[in-house]
Structure formats: structure tokens, C-alpha cells
Length: 152
Ligand SMILES: [Zn+2]
Image (cartoon, rainbow, N blue to C red; front, side, top):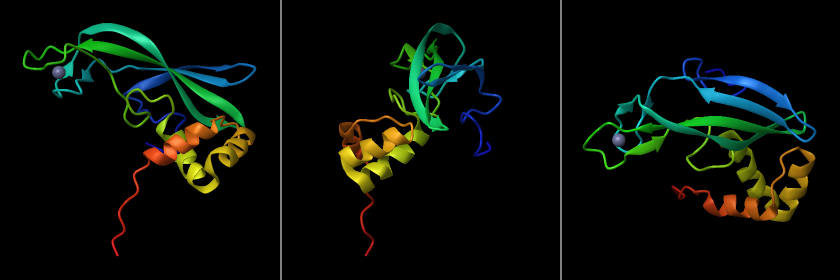
């Protein structure tokens, strides 16, 4: 996948349905189009859809305007009788972690900014860049970041 893709979705995985500009943000409406999804518990591909819901993910801004990804996520029945999970939601690891409310690429910007500028300083700079985040959020990202142990 090209690094310049609007969303980290392969053409075979999903598609952007619509770009909706509002007064405060640009909304990218997207959905996956694959016929199957892999159960995160047992790894077996599932085809039977159970339901769907919308997920909102904050993404990198465009020209200083906040961008929100409104993603339709489908729930599937896992048909593997040995699997303890009956229903699961499809996942897009390249886009966001499960239950995350920010895309991975946004977190890849916020976390180092939190390290460099701290909570309140980072919040002020991010507001200018169209990436509103509270100081507490930045500090939480810094605490969550895994720091590799020193080799020497
Ligand atoms: Zn399963």
C-alpha cells in the first residue's frame, strides 16, 4: 500500500464511501467490503454477518482541519464450534487498535509530541495543528508507550 493512501485500506479490503466536510471537521465515511472476516480468537474466517455499528476514529488533520473516520464495522458469527467466542467485530489493524478512538498514524504523531512537549505544552501546539487533544491524553499516551530497554 502506498504511504500516501487516504486510509490504510487495500482496495480489496474496503473503500471510502464519502468525504463529508462540516463546519468543524472533515468526515471520511468508510466500510470494509470483504466477504469474510477472521475471528481474532481462533483465526477461522467467518462469513455470517450478525450486525454492524459505526466507529468514530480521530485521524490526522488535513490543512489544519480535524479529520474523523466514520467506519462501519460488521459483527460476524464465529462458526468454529471449538471457539469460545460466538460473535466478533472485524478488525483493521493497520488503521486502529481494537477499541481505540484514534488512528494508529495519529497516535504515532501524538505520542512523540507528548514526550517532547509534555501535556499542556503539547495540547497548545496540537490545537494549532488541527489535532485537538487534552494534556491528560498526551500524558496518558506517554505513560502507555513502551520504552525499549537500553542495550548498553
Ligand atoms: Zn472464533
